[in-house]
Amino acid sequence: MSIAARVLPAFDHIVQGTKVHLAAIPDDKLDWRPHPKSWTAGEIGSHLANLPGWTVPTLTLDELDVAPVDGEGPKQPEYHSSAEMVAAFEENTAAARSAIESTSDDTFMSNWTMLAGGVERFSMPKISVVQAFILDHLIHHRGQLTVYLRMLDVPVAQTYGPTADFPEM
Image 1 (cartoon, rainbow, N blue to C red):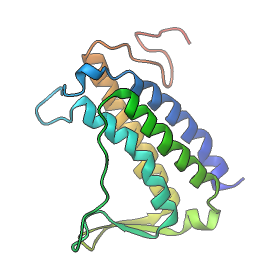
Image 2 (image 1 turned 90 degrees about the vertical axis):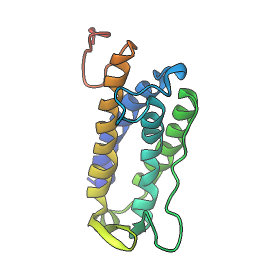
Image 3 (image 1 turned 45 degrees about the vertical axis):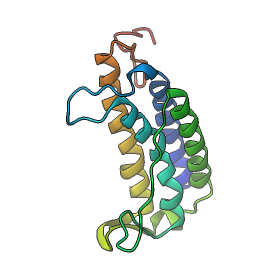
């Protein structure tokens, strides 16, 4: 079985659960934050919408400088409604899924390096970057978002099983 064939079921499950939570963010609460040091609901939602977009450069480039000395790094758009977040997320996940499907095992096993100001921050096989830096990162921030939703008294949907709001499987 190819690496892509092993990754895609988890990718699809993570995407499905994340999309439901993005859609639940109330547009009138995008500026809300649980603590002064926390992101707003809109910032965390925008970040989640953009994260899958990191898949294509991870699989098609060997390195990326996120803060190049001689220019600007990649820009991450912000969205102004949950509908915009969901639309961006769908676009980014479609491109990510296509990139994963078309990536060879040899490419997945080749290294990808993140630089900041020309300094290496980390280098690891591309499959590890997809798993840790993209998929696990999505799960991490999705978990934060579910806490935001709970604090805003928005029903929290199921991702891995029942929730207080949706106890029936």
